[in-house]
Image (cartoon, rainbow, N blue to C red; front, side, top):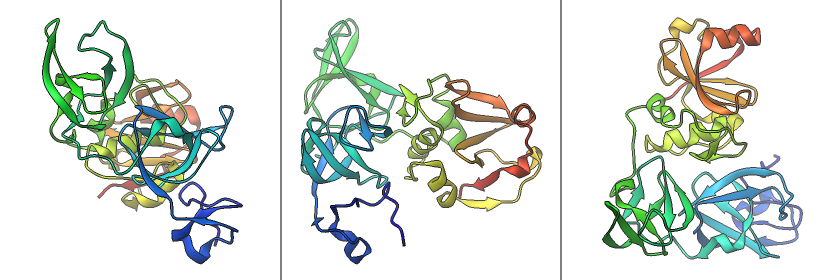
Length: 286
């Protein structure tokens, strides 16, 4: 059996010790726990600035680090199991401290001072877990919270509980108009599967990162050949792309053809692509 290197920490010279006999390599590592301390961290295929981008790890995301060398950490996300290289400076060893709040807006800038005119030192995406050290800093009619890790966030962006949406279509609608970004999964840019993954977080569910993984893991396949038989929140897969049915004949997707998250009429899309709904795989979330 060939192990998928996206979801298994294995390469020619090193592997996760938990893989046991599944990997034939000269060296194994147990890894150490760490968590991400920067808002959006590129996850690369190789330890190089010129490497291809696979995805992003987000602020507060817990990882297991198997090797650190030349400024890069080879690690695996504890959230969606994705493996890759990130800059080691974006990590702090140890488990994530218990959060007091979560970013509940679509995203929030972290400021150097409790002042919207001070430098924005980072961007924290929706769902980012934070520990508020002190609250109630008021400047220019805005109230800020000082974070345990440094910097100030507007209190209006925070909630004591993870943010949620009533259903999948409502969750993806939050990102309408956001730019398309290969590997992205935040307000600053998303690809199609990143949009699905982040939307499911609003439902309290963790799903795989890439479309091929999602197609095999989310819900159940349904035999739908007519748009009229689709249900709101159905996922519509084609090779390398996924769309969310939003009802009334429309889909929402992060579309590379338009480089944005947009709502499109499904019938018009199919006509433009010279395809039928039967050509796609439809999966219905539970």
